[in-house]
Image: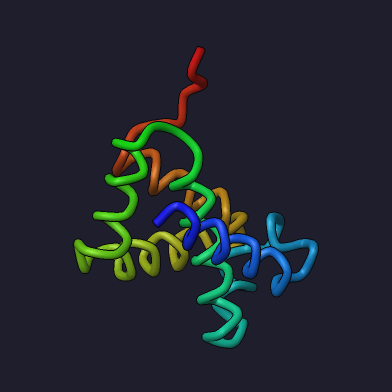
Length: 104
C-alpha cells in the first residue's frame, strides 16, 4: 500500500505546476477535476507517508472511508479561498489525526 501512495505522490508532483504549494484554495478549485485529483492524491499520499503508521491509517480512514472528507475540505476551501490549499489541507489533517511530530 505504501508503494502505491509513493507512486501516486510522485505522479501528482510531476503533473502539478511547480507553484502548487502556494496555490490558493480558489485557484485549486478552478483547476480541472483531473488536476484536483492529482493534487489531492499527492498531498494525501505524502501526509500518509510522513508520521506514524497510526496517523497514516487515520488519514486514510478520514479521506477514503469516512465520506465526510470532501465536504469538510470544500467547506474550509470556501471559507478561506485565498489561503494556500496545501496549508488548509494540512490543518484539516492535523485536526483529524493529530499533528505530525518528529520521531527520535
